[in-house]
Length: 388
Image (cartoon, rainbow, N blue to C red; front, side):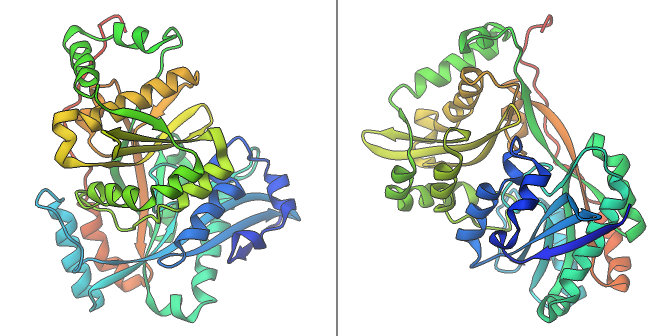
């Protein structure tokens, strides 16, 4: 088998033959319409690249590469931010002698999960991964700006069953880092309705869910069309920033117009719901349906009204409702607010990233700090009855 790699700077440069050969229409995250939505609306802050690996002349793999800048001095670390992230940022600043870091990511800056590399079945995954690493280096070498300024290379969010292959990255001096897990709820096939789901709860968790719906009864939920997302763009952006600004560590900002394109392209596979109180938009939720899973994306919340009207709790339970109504297998709530999401029955799905500094000497100095990174600690709740 003779493997080779080709670099594409824009999604429209990739020949249709590649998409046909990879045949990954069932996985939304590796389809042209999904990827183009992010590229079209976010190039003001991110450089996008795409690596295609060929076996002879047959495309067998694609990797999504994004280059972004994170200013860790200007960043507004909240009072509950991970203290170690602040320490690493300070040490990295001393190491590279500037206030920002250029990060090359294999994966998505906007989504947690294994959405950076797709490899066709029956391929030598280790050799394909070798080609991808060479391709990442080739992107840097071919661009004088990237060659000078890229500091960190990050391959993100490998699930546990992928680690036997992903651990080969250690041979290229990448350090594995276990990061905060995704919180995933597996939907029992016997739950034909939201009421069946609640009936599986222990009493206090069932009372909590019903209280959330009662408290949020004044909210009017509406599934948005692409045009409605466009109309409410300014309000949605404000609500999005309310949540983003409270995040412990969120290096990139999404252009909300991305959601207009996603709704137009993915239709029923993209979920977008707004929440109104007295005709005022006070919250939203978004998500992607792919491979029998509803994967939560960003939410937006008016925090001044959140406690009184249980906006966030309503959003979380509505994700479950949508999953049940769509006859899906899992709900992926993402990696924040683990304890709250565990009260809905979600459990951690461990994720591992692989990271290195571009330069060997700097990477040697960087490794001790990387080894100290640990996932956030939270108390896992178990809401289901013993028999569940």
